[in-house]
Length: 177
Image: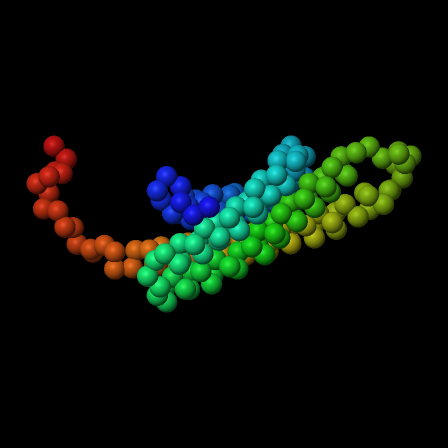
């Protein structure tokens, strides 16, 4: 996919990544820390993470096409290099989202053991939740920071010398009256 309605697809697809990756990161951390939220979201959490994961290589591929159709400079190359690093973060979000969802499902199923006796699932529930919470916070933070860095570099590449720091209109055409 290279063009959508005459515009470079990357310019449009990037909005999915900019919204879905941080949204997935937030949902993952909330669900990892608060099991009731994980049970309530159910399979929506891994589904959201999957859509975010798929959107990353589509956007990257469209960006590589666009890179070949713009004047190359250091800012564009830097943006492309940073963009290539987001896929592992998105994959981490997906894996953890699936694990948090699976763990939430496992803990919500009734035990076949006798009431009052500690089961293996209950015994490992808290350490597993803590592990998922710490990993989720780390991967979510890394993913959001990477999206910010990539977006910042893309904005600098796109708008570098592309606007005037002073207003160019004199106010006569659009004076608000």
